[in-house]
Image 1: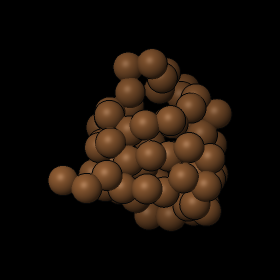
Image 2 (image 1 turned 120 degrees about the vertical axis):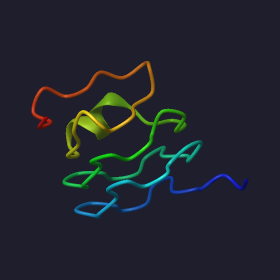
Image 3 (image 1 turned 60 degrees about the horizontal axis):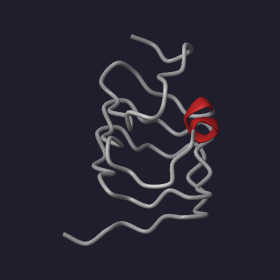
Image 4 (image 1 turned 180 degrees about the horizontal axis):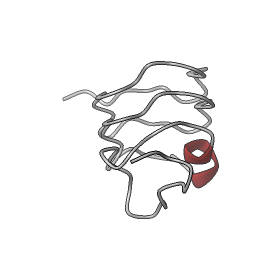
Length: 75
């Protein structure tokens, strides 16, 4: 499996619902307003809390253990 390289990509307001972002390099990616409901970021690389805080997700969004689920994420 190839690793997705999206570092520094502008993903603002992108529809990434149910996306498989396992092992994707997200360093510097802009996620403001991105829809991450049900997406799998559990093993994404270089993703930081600030990126997650600006995105939209829910209880089904898988995050790396080092990150907290934002309080504003619905259900």
